[in-house]
Length: 491
Image 1: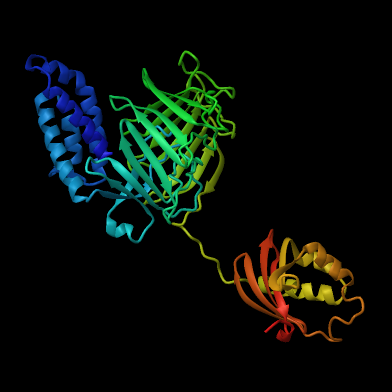
Image 2: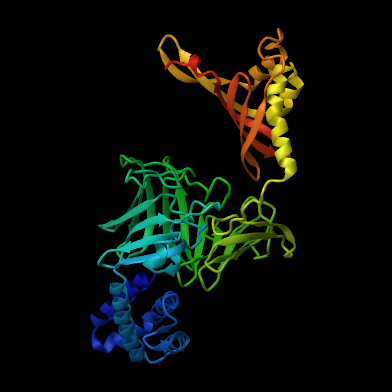
């Protein structure tokens, strides 16, 4: 973010330097709003780095610059800021580390931004993203070392191990790789993304490509995004390969949309627009959804509204979503509410940052596991298909060592649950498959909460069982076995 702001501010300075002296004040006044916007963004991003920048408290700098009316003092301070920030960038060795990416569920127009910055030493021992920059302070690579278990929106995740970014002739090209350096597709199921910029540096389109550079559609059936400025909006249109306009996503039916941004580039709101580029309700009565971020960059709230700005339930039957984060930016809770802020549902978000370990298994669990394991053998020995039905899970996977006489090779021979039910019915009908008094033994190897591993031995076999506890009931789900007499196998 600092680098984007610096480049924009330099553009204004260079432009001002080329203007005749008698017109300079007029042009600087004209650019004052832009200067203020980028200074606010720059100071906002610097707040994450250091509470005291160049020896002056952050809040004092912000108040002085943003409210300053003397143009020359602003420019002088701007130059000092740029020099100091450049020194910072150089000392950072063109690499930055972040715990998270700023949330985005609006558009790929939104820049990828890291939040919760950390230094390299911390990054070596924790989940993070690494951003790399070239000599022109442009982002050229993102390495994804972020370990998470929570579900991510496709626009909020890079979806790959590594993204490389190149710049040439008004184009920004993003290519995706796995940890072995192999080209892969990202969360949008595309292999290459190419952004185009106009001569003023405005991002005006994005196209998707296969690995062979042929145009393609994303998993949302979008081949191209187009953007333009219109009043307070960035207007977005999306097209498939047939050049037909498509909605924002398969599950959200906004057509042409208007995007509004906060001064730091974060998405503020997304509006459905009609053919006259005016805000309009979609087919469900929703005209916009709006986002709120806290000072750390966390996406804390999102709301849905009709054309009048009144809160309205979306197709998922809620109007307000609020997120709770821990001290290092992990989303740990989601609350969804109606138009009157009445809670509809609330759930914890399960992440790698909070792991609740299982207690030691109960005596009842151990007894049930033993009973189910022995029940499998007893069902075969005593011809009890009804017992077999109670111990075998519907997804049973039973295998042993088989031998193919044609290929003269061993293979893993499978037995289905249906076959096991038939075996329990009549496989031992002669009562000759087992000794008169069978010797069945069970040893529980391990139990962790809802899964267990068991060693089961009988006169005939040695078997290893996996059991799973579903709806309070233990079942055998995996079973691998071999004959106890190893002479039955080739040496």
